[in-house]
Length: 196
Image 1 (tube, rainbow, N blue to C red):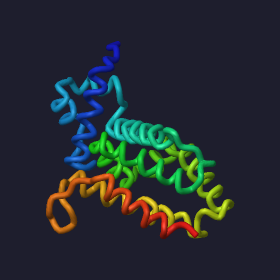
Image 2 (tube, rainbow, N blue to C red):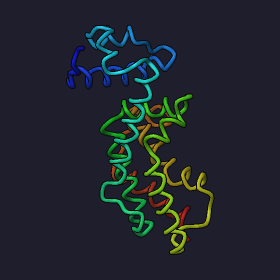
Image 3 (cartoon, rainbow, N blue to C red):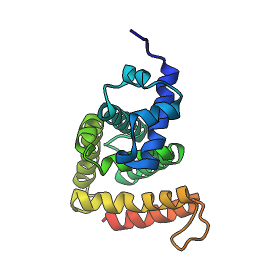
Image 4 (cartoon, rainbow, N blue to C red):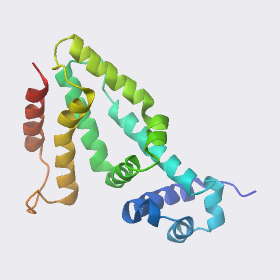
């Protein structure tokens, strides 16, 4: 039996992420991945049982990495403003550092793999964020709104700004560079919308 080569395995994962983002799930295949990675198809099957196993494992790993980044220096007992600011910082840092992973996560979270990947990678994160919201509501730091509306208002502006940054263009097609001033301006408006 052939042994695992962690360097090759990392290369395969990165190539798989790139290919998923570029080609989508339907255009992604093991033979092409092997060719792009410079490995034999047999090598892929040392790491993954099939295409579905590969996609699930990549999705779970991205989700777990995202979760680990989101909880850095964050606690669900933080004051709402401080905790939301930390979430913005952590989310922005992850998105800017790993744009391909974020694009792949977006693709997979709108696919038939969504429920499985979310369950396997983010269940603890969901509990932490639910506790954060409950604490903010209990302390009357947050308006009583549905979870869905909270997520749209709290993070929608940040993700729009990050998309502009990633594309290097604003909504009108002009150049865009995300600055701390722009981030702070958006954050303050979000805070006004969500707090008493």
